[in-house]
Length: 292
Image (cartoon, rainbow, N blue to C red):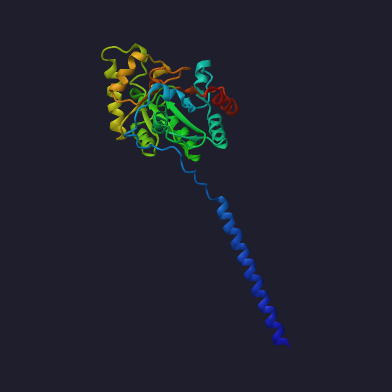
């Protein structure tokens, strides 16, 4: 009987030890799974092929529901020297992150200019609750703050580059390098032109077309290895007399900030709204709904 009793005790001890070991392993594995970093959702923003897309008439384009397009500039914390306009054009870092989270939580899906172009002309389908995020002026925080934030949600954007500032470091603002711009393009974002030095489009004459459009386009194409087909007006200001100059240079759409689009050529003055630095995520959402 002693031998049988000892055998039973030994077996029970082994069984309990084994269960404890397995439980510990299960707990460890569970811990591992919870600590793994979540991967970003697959992006709905695609640089689709638009070769062969037929340009629709103005009436057809104007009849399509507008896609919300947000325009950002600097994303940094406000300084004591920032005035009213400076703060309006500058979204503080945490506020920007909260705005993007709000968009994701609200079910918005980013799209790129090629997708918008195909939709406006041929009615190509877009993801649910489409929105376009655009960033002007080449400032460095668009690479260091904006891009990592967008990646977290599988978002992509269109960056409109002012070529005079590429790689420059200033007293109050630094700008993206050519390598950083290429990286954004290689990651599937859209790169567009924002002129050479932000000169008012409405004042172009003579050699301005070459200096403000031709040379920047060539430089950006050399940097990205991609064709530059989209343009954003400095200050959002445009005149229809300049539309033929844009078309002649192969620009498919141009982005403005106006409330109205040209009735005869709406692709050359696509509407955006500035995402104000004074807006909370809730206010931003209200303005998106109200404006589009």
